[in-house]
Length: 100
Image (cartoon, one colour):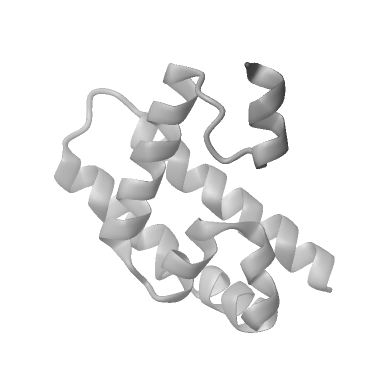
């Protein structure tokens, strides 16, 4: 069951990033959609099932577990900027050496 919950949490994180990447909606509506995702019963069940072991899924997991809506939005924005800039953000330090 843990593998299913991990997959579900990855899908939740991708959903939050997709909501934030949408154009044509206001920031208030984006925040409301992220709030709906984070407070959904299925999300809360997944967080409860993963517990401390969910930390391996990254920074966004802690924000979702704490129901930090603003943090989730900022993290999604940061991920979007990192992809656009093509900087090696979030990689291991050994990968940075290969980029030079």
